[in-house]
Length: 177
Image 1 (cartoon, rainbow, N blue to C red):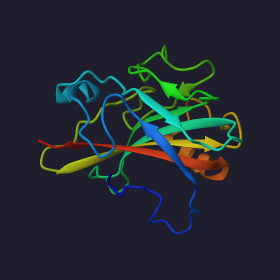
Image 2: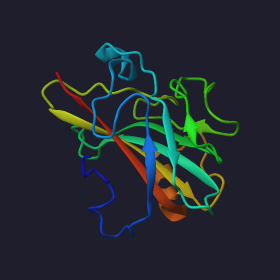
Image 3: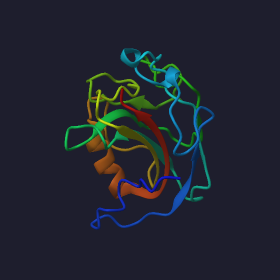
Image 4: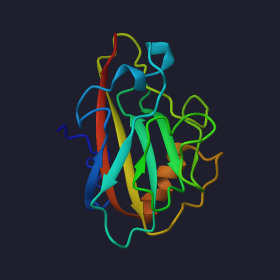
């Protein structure tokens, strides 16, 4: 397992209890399959299956984000963000398709860095090495964050900071061509 908690180095954030996030598509620290990568990388832009367990009993809702902190931007690249997951504990593969057909009732995606409210699969620029794709599920003390579909993933993560009671992390990797 890679030590990739994106919040660990930021001392102003209090540590949260952790819980398990898994995928049928890849193991923690493993390579993300081609079907889960961007069309531009030869993939299908299919969001991976995700499941989470072991979160606190007082959890009232969840939010999901996926960040590539290794993107050559200085700020990373948001690939996916979902608000309003309620008490769901799993998302099927493909739940991040444009149109939100695979999300639980009441859940919605906010726009990713490409300004699309959908999952955007990995497609790291040539020559930029190994990229980590950090899927973070945050257990909340509220059923849903006060953020609409026009919200940015950074704003969603900011709000999750104030309502998070536990955090589960799954990291996949892709090596740039």
